[in-house]
Image (cartoon, rainbow, N blue to C red):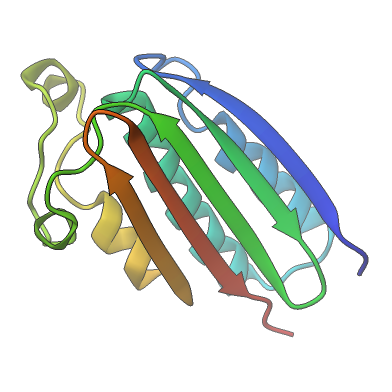
Length: 141
Protein backbone atom coordinates (compact mmCIF):
# COMPACT_ATOMS: atom_id res chain seq x y z
CA UNK A 1 0.00 0.00 0.00
CA UNK A 2 1.44 3.37 -0.95
CA UNK A 3 1.11 6.29 1.41
CA UNK A 4 -2.17 8.12 1.78
CA UNK A 5 -2.49 11.34 3.78
CA UNK A 6 -5.40 13.33 5.18
CA UNK A 7 -5.55 16.71 6.92
CA UNK A 8 -8.43 17.99 9.02
CA UNK A 9 -9.02 21.38 10.60
CA UNK A 10 -10.79 21.22 13.96
CA UNK A 11 -12.51 24.12 15.71
CA UNK A 12 -12.64 24.30 19.47
CA UNK A 13 -16.16 24.01 20.85
CA UNK A 14 -17.58 22.48 17.65
CA UNK A 15 -19.13 19.39 19.23
CA UNK A 16 -21.54 19.00 16.27
CA UNK A 17 -18.61 17.98 14.06
CA UNK A 18 -16.55 16.20 16.74
CA UNK A 19 -15.73 12.74 15.43
CA UNK A 20 -15.94 13.52 11.71
CA UNK A 21 -12.22 12.93 11.12
CA UNK A 22 -12.26 9.60 12.96
CA UNK A 23 -15.39 8.53 11.04
CA UNK A 24 -13.77 9.35 7.69
CA UNK A 25 -10.56 7.52 8.62
CA UNK A 26 -12.60 4.50 9.73
CA UNK A 27 -14.36 4.40 6.36
CA UNK A 28 -11.03 4.68 4.51
CA UNK A 29 -9.39 1.91 6.55
CA UNK A 30 -12.36 -0.38 5.86
CA UNK A 31 -12.00 0.31 2.12
CA UNK A 32 -8.31 -0.59 2.40
CA UNK A 33 -9.23 -3.90 4.08
CA UNK A 34 -7.30 -3.07 7.24
CA UNK A 35 -7.86 -5.58 10.06
CA UNK A 36 -10.89 -4.75 12.21
CA UNK A 37 -8.81 -4.78 15.42
CA UNK A 38 -6.46 -2.20 13.94
CA UNK A 39 -9.35 -0.05 12.74
CA UNK A 40 -10.86 -0.07 16.24
CA UNK A 41 -7.56 0.96 17.85
CA UNK A 42 -7.03 3.79 15.35
CA UNK A 43 -10.58 5.08 15.65
CA UNK A 44 -10.61 5.03 19.46
CA UNK A 45 -7.27 6.85 19.63
CA UNK A 46 -8.17 9.40 16.98
CA UNK A 47 -11.66 10.07 18.35
CA UNK A 48 -10.32 10.69 21.87
CA UNK A 49 -7.68 13.07 20.54
CA UNK A 50 -10.13 14.83 18.23
CA UNK A 51 -12.60 15.41 21.08
CA UNK A 52 -9.77 16.74 23.26
CA UNK A 53 -9.12 19.45 20.69
CA UNK A 54 -12.82 20.32 20.51
CA UNK A 55 -13.20 20.33 24.31
CA UNK A 56 -10.01 22.12 25.32
CA UNK A 57 -8.42 24.08 22.45
CA UNK A 58 -9.26 27.06 20.30
CA UNK A 59 -8.48 25.15 17.10
CA UNK A 60 -6.24 22.44 15.76
CA UNK A 61 -5.09 20.32 12.86
CA UNK A 62 -5.03 16.58 12.43
CA UNK A 63 -2.65 14.95 9.96
CA UNK A 64 -3.13 11.25 9.25
CA UNK A 65 -0.67 9.21 7.19
CA UNK A 66 -1.46 5.62 6.21
CA UNK A 67 1.25 3.42 4.75
CA UNK A 68 2.03 -0.29 4.54
CA UNK A 69 3.50 -0.37 8.05
CA UNK A 70 1.34 1.89 10.23
CA UNK A 71 -1.15 4.66 10.65
CA UNK A 72 0.50 7.81 11.97
CA UNK A 73 -1.60 10.61 13.46
CA UNK A 74 -0.30 14.03 14.48
CA UNK A 75 -2.68 16.38 16.25
CA UNK A 76 -1.51 19.92 16.87
CA UNK A 77 -3.70 22.41 18.69
CA UNK A 78 -3.67 26.02 19.79
CA UNK A 79 -4.99 26.16 23.30
CA UNK A 80 -4.21 26.28 27.00
CA UNK A 81 -1.73 23.41 26.87
CA UNK A 82 -1.40 20.69 29.49
CA UNK A 83 0.23 21.77 32.78
CA UNK A 84 1.06 18.25 34.00
CA UNK A 85 1.19 15.57 31.29
CA UNK A 86 1.84 12.76 33.79
CA UNK A 87 -1.26 13.75 35.76
CA UNK A 88 -3.29 14.05 32.53
CA UNK A 89 -2.33 10.45 31.69
CA UNK A 90 -4.08 9.21 34.86
CA UNK A 91 -7.45 7.52 34.35
CA UNK A 92 -10.23 9.83 35.53
CA UNK A 93 -8.19 13.05 35.64
CA UNK A 94 -9.97 15.81 33.74
CA UNK A 95 -9.76 19.57 33.31
CA UNK A 96 -12.94 19.71 31.23
CA UNK A 97 -15.35 22.53 31.97
CA UNK A 98 -18.72 21.79 33.60
CA UNK A 99 -20.47 22.49 30.26
CA UNK A 100 -18.28 19.95 28.45
CA UNK A 101 -18.90 17.38 31.19
CA UNK A 102 -22.67 18.03 31.00
CA UNK A 103 -22.52 17.01 27.30
CA UNK A 104 -21.02 13.65 28.29
CA UNK A 105 -17.38 14.43 27.55
CA UNK A 106 -14.45 15.04 29.87
CA UNK A 107 -14.45 11.79 31.85
CA UNK A 108 -10.66 11.74 31.99
CA UNK A 109 -10.26 8.78 29.65
CA UNK A 110 -8.87 10.57 26.58
CA UNK A 111 -5.11 10.23 26.97
CA UNK A 112 -5.31 6.86 28.79
CA UNK A 113 -7.45 5.47 25.94
CA UNK A 114 -5.02 6.83 23.36
CA UNK A 115 -2.13 5.13 25.15
CA UNK A 116 -4.04 1.84 25.53
CA UNK A 117 -5.02 1.72 21.85
CA UNK A 118 -1.78 2.84 20.21
CA UNK A 119 1.65 1.35 19.71
CA UNK A 120 3.27 4.74 20.19
CA UNK A 121 2.02 7.87 21.96
CA UNK A 122 3.91 11.08 22.52
CA UNK A 123 2.43 14.20 24.11
CA UNK A 124 4.25 17.54 24.03
CA UNK A 125 2.66 20.64 25.46
CA UNK A 126 3.46 24.25 26.25
CA UNK A 127 1.12 26.02 28.65
CA UNK A 128 -0.57 28.95 26.94
CA UNK A 129 0.51 27.80 23.48
CA UNK A 130 -0.88 24.35 22.73
CA UNK A 131 -0.35 20.63 22.55
CA UNK A 132 1.00 18.20 19.96
CA UNK A 133 0.00 14.54 20.21
CA UNK A 134 1.63 11.89 18.01
CA UNK A 135 -0.04 8.48 17.74
CA UNK A 136 1.09 5.44 15.76
CA UNK A 137 -0.75 2.19 15.28
CA UNK A 138 0.96 -0.70 13.48
CA UNK A 139 -0.92 -2.44 10.71
CA UNK A 140 -1.87 -6.01 11.56
CA UNK A 141 -2.13 -8.38 8.63
